Amino acid sequence: MRFSLQREALLRPLQQVVNVVERRHTLPVLGNLLTVVDNGRLSLTGTDLEVEMVSSAQVEDGEDGEVTLPARKLFDIIRALPDGSRVQVVLNNDKATVSAGRSRFTLATLPASEFPTVDEVDLVERVRIGEAALKELIERTAFAMAQQDVRFYLNGLLFDLNDSTLRCVATDGHRLALCETTLPEAAQTRKQIILPRKGVLELQRLLEGGDAELELEVGRNHVRVRRADVTFTSKLIDGRFPDYEAVIPIGADRHVQVGRELLRAALQRAAILSNEKFRGIKLDVDTNLLRVVAHNPENEEAVEEVEAQTTIQSLSIGFNVGYLLDALSALRGEEVIIQLRDANSSALVRESTDERSRHVVMPLRL
Image 1 (cartoon, rainbow, N blue to C red):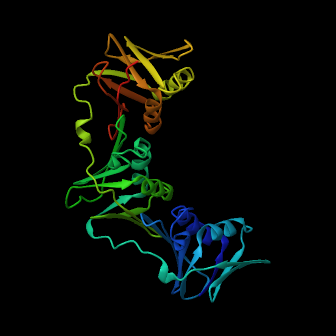
Image 2: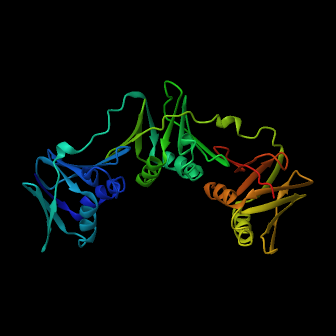
Image 3: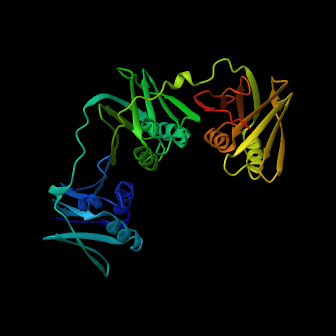
């Protein structure tokens, strides 16, 4: 096996696949990338047995063959080479020589036959979606995923495919983030899948936005996302996601409309004096006024007053300030609406002009 190409042409697919490879692994071959040259095309595959990433590039000069190369070392070498270098990789017995200009590196290899492959996707549904739309769905929701929760189905992101709508939903039991988009073509059946946390983060890193169209293939145990230059595959969490629609407040008819950046800045300042453990702040809502109050065990106090349009005479409610800030950061509009019912009920936070993205935040007893 032999191939050569420009440093930049090799660095891009390496960047896409190297993060999938775990630094600590039980099988030595999982620290390697499956490297295949076939008919002038180079493909690089990395996996941790849960997530698989395959990226490809055209080679300038190549001889067909396959082997596995140490992922992190190869990436660090290519990244450290000067811009514009022409990189050549030659396999000789069980060693691979990487050369560029006057630099030469000899790497140990493992046979391609030892490299594990992710099972074939038992296809249930296939839809097309714009790359920018999928990127937006994940960015607006992924922050609300649980981390190492015993309710394992919360440690991931729900993809809810229904007719021509795709929703992404995440919750950790204290807050919920939901965003939806319209698909170019309707799905054949309603399907809910839960993508695990690592898969979500790798997919988010991979997506660049732009006008490209992706294929989203949903299987019984896997999901696959295809783009022209890369294929992402992940196992799914085998569990049932909670009925998130039941969590979205109904009858929250008391509204506060306020500038998003104005409120975010006030919350950030008040958070400085909030309790470091509970991060609690209190929202006092009055006629056309929103007051943000924070206390800490040292009896220090922060008070921020923000002009707002309200339909409330008087209401005080506590929240974790971090959850509110995360929700505001995920929204895009200039004005946000906070819908409230009473001091003991969840709040719904959304943009004033767009309801595609909604955030539910549980109240905090202060």
